[in-house]
Image 1 (cartoon, chains in turn red, yellow):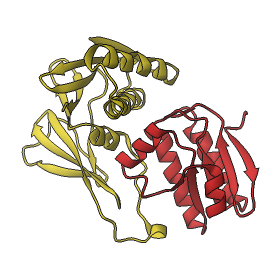
Image 2: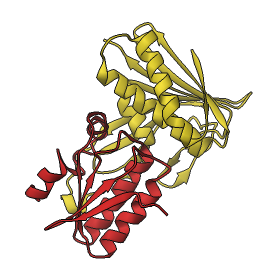
Image 3: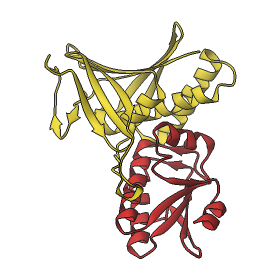
Length: 113
Length: 175
C-alpha cells in the first residue's frame, strides 16, 4: 500500500506531510491509521503539513479530530501547518481553529513547539 | 440549472469545479472568494451526504438565484433523513410534540434541528463556549451538517412522502 504521509523526524516532533491533493472520504481512514501508528510508536507530537492539499471534506476533518483525541489521551498533540487559504477558512467557519494549534508553515511550527 | 452527481468520490472534485464555474460565470460574476468558498463547502458536503447516506447512485443539484439569495438544492430518492438525538433514532413523519432538538453538541458547536412540519426540518448551529481545558476538550467527529449550516444562512430538509423525494436546500443571502 502506498503511504499517504511522508514522514520526517525532527528535534522535538515528527512532521507528516500529506502527499495527496485531496484529503477526503477516500483516504480519511488511511490517514487515521498512519497517524495512530505514529502515536502508538511513541511519536506523540506531530505536525501535519497540508502543503499539497487543496481540498478537505468532513470525513477527513473527522479523522483529524480522532487523531487529535488519540494524541491528547497519550499526552501528545497534533499541530497543523501549510494550510491553503480556503481550507483555513473552513476550519475557522466550524471553529476548528480553536481545536487545533495552527502554524503558517511547518518550519514555523517546528521552531515554536 | 440542474447538475447530475454520480455518487462516486472520484467524480466529486470535477463535479465541484463544474458547479463552481457555473456559479462564478452565470450567477455571481466577479471576485467573491468568500461566497465561492461557502458554495464549495456546501456542495462538497451535499455530495458526501449523497455518497454516504442516500443509498442511491446519483443525486441532482439545482443551483439558482431567488431574489437576493443563492440557492443550492440537492435532490435524491434515497433513504429519508433519520435524525438521531442523544442516541435516540427518530423517523419521519415527525410527531407534533417534536419542536427543536439537539442533534450534536461539543465544546464548540451545538447542532440543532427545528421541526417545520412532519416532513421538514431546519438545521442551525449555535456557538458554544467551552469551560474545558485544551486537553479535556470534547470534540465531535461529524462535521457534514455543521459545515453546511455554518456556510449558509438557511438550511432546510424536506421529504415528499408521496414519491420519496428528499430535498436539502441551503441558501446564502447575497449582499
